[in-house]
Length: 483
Image (tube, rainbow, N blue to C red):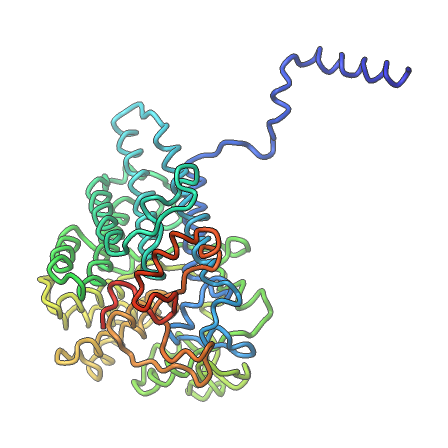
């Protein structure tokens, strides 16, 4: 009885202090609401981490581009991406950690009521920045897999099992969105939108305009072999609207010295204490043949002090101590993660010009691209001029000329290097001596995630049925990869 009386007294005291007990469900240290800025920042970092990281559980683009190879465990260099569920992880991160956060950021922005014309402009800029990153992310998903969830994505209540939309249709819609976003931005320092919450451009709308138009350019050039007239028109519109032309406008996320805000390369190459990656002989041999001065920026010498460079055999088991290593520049925790740079844009313009777009001379853009790459890696414009004298643009073989140099310049940007290779078919890459399931071609896409085939089976099966041969293979090409 005493225990019951004490319990009753305690309850009476508690209720008398608070007649409303609903606040007991509120977690003071884990608030139920957040700010649009926090979601935008988190999405930015998740996106760049995924695109620039090198964990073989998440991202094998450097391996597919044959810029890097592995040492003890060469599985991913041999095209095994299912054991570690690489497609599942890539798919999940881009949808769950990037697109969902951006969608939620946009929802919070939609609830804001600006009190002045200036605040109205700032809010409009924020919404445009969110949409630009969403468009970029969807474009990466298409370029990785082909058809993907789009019109029914990100709405688990209405569409728990979203359909897979046609990749080319998605592309055109994204270009329309990017066009509207770029034109809506108020490129004025007084309307800086996200400010410091924007880890890439600090809210500078003028630079976001160039980034949006550069994504449009990339997507239009990708489409040049499937819809030449449309691609030409969109290329010219993007250039007229203004694209990235200087390394000062590169889409760089600047990392911090300490984890978890350091460049993920630092975690993979330094903190892990592992020696899993070395430069691939495919790239090193090509640059040796060209006597390319960027070798010293990309790789360490082997032997040390010899002035020579030696890449590991692509797709084989390699002893770490017997080859050049990744340069210490990339081991810096503050090394920037890049989504787009001036060199890539200039190579895209060179290709567009070679295919008939009215965007200037292909040779000029080619020269600009190589020069931008040199200066971005700490070499000089004079170094680039000397190099170009020996390796000039070859209009008669523009795909090889542009393709090989773009591939070299896109070092450390594995996804873009792999995409450039798929579109231009240069450089000529060979499969390793041993491959997973006897694969006889360099992969042209990621296979759809096993989790999607299990959970969203009907939609995924419909997408797979559209692939030539009806199989979810790594060698089936995405829609714009025609040759």
